[in-house]
Length: 487
Image (cartoon, rainbow, N blue to C red; front, side):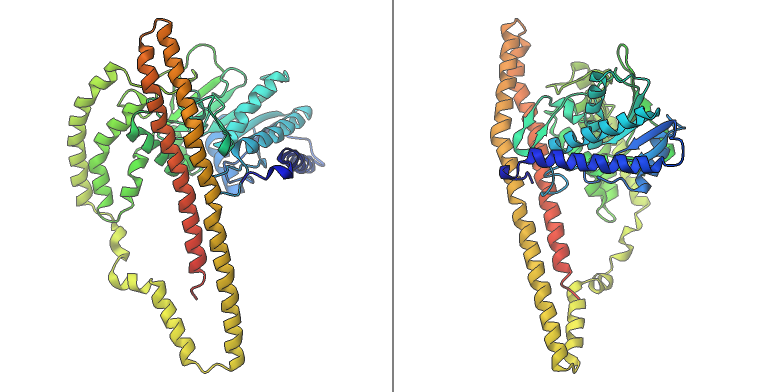
């Protein structure tokens, strides 16, 4: 949560950043004691909720994304705050504050490495890609040569054509401490950006009035966005380099995703889930892809380095493709459905009634209770057990209550954004359309009405999704606490 104003959050943030930076610099200096520094260092940052990248993560992203581009770079984990109030927890730094601290840490570390004569590769995923993107402009403002620093990013929310932070720039949501910064610069430093198809943070639909595309993008944030380190080298090798326009220092790669994340919950249903998902997917994919423009692709077909905000409707040429694709999709769906039924998933093997009863915690509790009642424990043991149970129950109820009411503030902040920030943004979009019409572009009248509707369709989906994540996390925590009471 945001700290109360009486605690002077700016001072706290500055102090925290200074402490983290001091710790990092000391660690790097210690790593170089007694030996010459490496000629090329890769600073590896984690994503939201992962301020300290584990060794397994560093090894994976180095093997998949850094080493293929910079084989001599020595990877080092870099600590950054990676807080995201509401998304990774209700008691977290607002993302703007977290990103600002991260930029300071990254900038100080890069400056130190350059001073030691090293070339630096900055690696970012998700929130740390925001950090890396903003750091580019800061380095350029300080006249740091492009030969000294390179960047590799995965799941970049500031992707020029597809990043969520570009689609709705420059919207600011004060209640959540969130600003849509715009696009990652494409011409300042050598950069490689990898995006998974349907990753809603980095591959968000352009035509957001397509609700199916918006819902699929949110599902992509849940099911796709966090999977970059888990891919195989063969999967990364399928990446398609996207076309660009004009001079650029950035290469953009799109990694195809086989299944719509929107259908992942359906696929999780034993036995029938996969066949039903296979039946629906071909036609549903056409309707989802229409949110990107061409219904045959799950990403925008424009130049990847051109900053592209959300739009209202795809082109007539794209719409004309839909009927034929739906016909062929229906045929494909029936074929896939039959094929899936002929090769059923073995997921149901453990779902027999006896197994379910055996897994019932109430059954286990009853067995334990019977054992206690049948035993002839001394009175001292009984009293000690009652005292321990009393402590456990009270502590659990206290934790459950804390978790439950902790959701109330971010819920209020989300509602605040929906009833204040969003209407203000809608009014600005309406006035933009009127201005276009006043300038002689009659399409502006359509935009004045349609753009607010398209924006609301996407942003309300995302705000509702953020609330869903918080409530789901709270319920999971509460259930875990209550389950802990069962012997």
